[in-house]
Image 1 (cartoon, helix red, strand yellow):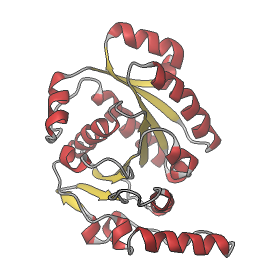
Image 2: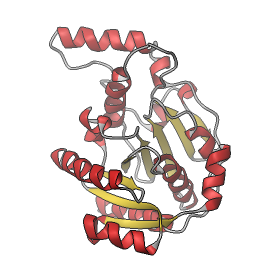
Image 3: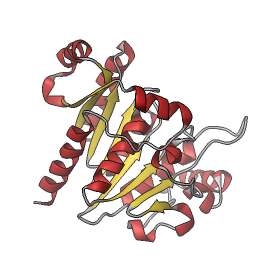
Length: 257
């Protein structure tokens, strides 16, 4: 099963991706976390893993990748970045950081002033996720950059479900409507995770989102906030994350039947 996690900046996407990955690992799943956020440099710390070589660098770097994309575009061809299926075991070993059955790979990162846009990373993310083939007990969690650019680039094409993380803000509610519309155009289901909330805020948000679309409510946690501030591993139990874990397991089991 492939899960795309999205939301506005600061909503808690990477934190929830990390804790969800740990929860699924404890349930006997092999978990691959795919970091497609070119501006997030701390996901590996939250997972307790080293930062691996990015797939973009392994393929020759941003300039080489961009050259391939532009050549294909001007030739009127489909972008030939990745044109064959990959399993977790076929990902280049230098592009993987792992411990037990928890794996992390990164698509690519912006590193320098004036280096240009992240377009090559978006194309590579879409191709990799689309061509990733999983075993029944595998779960891939795709952590994305803030906003909707990843949806505009079609990264959700190859996923099974989209989970959007919302903090209690007007911006999150407004973004949820655009996200739901774009995910609907891709014919993918989208569900919401309410993060950093209390009962009163949750009730107000559910009234606007619809109760059937909200799969979890996660209260504000000082422990999680402190670990995030210091860049520590997210080896915590978060109230509400069990609901997300159970949702993922049940959805995965239904898709296999």
